[in-house]
Structures are given as C-alpha cells and as structure tokens.
Amino acid sequence: MNKSVDDKDHVLIGKIVGAHGVKGTSKVRSYADSPSLFKPGEALLARNETSGSTEHLEINWVKPHTGAVLISFRGVSDRNQAEALIGSELFIAKDKLPALDEDVHYWFDLIGIDVYTIEGDHLGRIESIIETGSNDVYVVKDGSTEVLIPALGSVVLNIDTEHNRMEVDLPEGLI
Image (cartoon, rainbow, N blue to C red):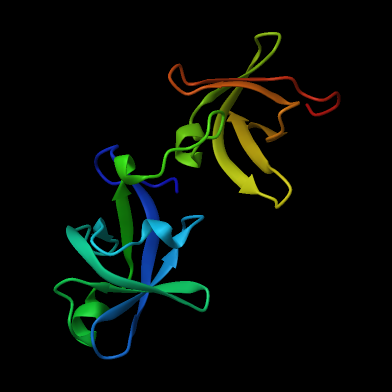
C-alpha cells in the first residue's frame, strides 16, 4: 500500500485484474489485509495506469473469489465496461480506514520515516517493508547502505509518525 494518487488523502488497496461474467463484474486483487474495506456503498477512486485518468466508482456488492474479490460497481453493467477498467488501481480515502490500536501503524505511515539508533546515529529512511510471516522487516536505506531491521518490540523502541522518526536498538552484529 505504498503508491498514492495526486493527493495524500488516499491509499492503494487493490487492482482490477479482470472481468468476470457478462454483467460487468470486476475481479480485483486486494492489497488490503482484510476484504472488509470493500463494502457496498463505499466509494473508491480508480486510476487507470495506461491513460492516467481517474474516476470514482461506488461498490454495489462484493464476493470473495479464489484469491481475489469480485466486485460489482454502480454504472458498470456489461463485460465491455468491466474490461475497460482492467489495470485500474483502486484507492480508498485514508479517513475510511479502520482505526488501529496504539503502537500499530499502517505501512504507508512508516515508508519514508527516518530511523535512528538509541545513540542518535541516523541509519536512513524506511524504503520498503518485507512481510516474513513471523514479523515484518524494515528495509532502511541511506545512499548505497541498506540495513534490514526486524519489526520487534525489543528492536523498535519508538515510532513517532508526527515527527517522522523511529528509534531502534539494534542487536549486535546487525550493521
């Protein structure tokens, strides 16, 4: 969920990867942890990668479908209309995202944050995040230097998104 549209008020949650059936249903690859972001009545912003154009799409209904989500959009009633949307990235307004528990952050809030050691040394900025199953790993870069930091409570001591700063206590030998 790292790409954004022209404004900073939306976040990427999926991509239309196909048409399904003849009644205008779209097959969507969800980038969200939960398909609950796709709900009837929700307005999404669709950006066509090829043309760069954007349009608002309102969801009629949603159904899970083998590793994807089938979505019917209001005003898209035949296969040709659905095929025209293939490749479009789907964005949702950030204020529509569910609230998180304290000390839990969306990835888009962490990308670009400056990372410092407890000694005050600047390690770089978080460029990306790797999901490993047991814990995430922050990819921190400073020029050609790259450090992989495990997202563990014993390592990540403080995250201050308001001041764009993370403080870490690196295990010996990590750098």
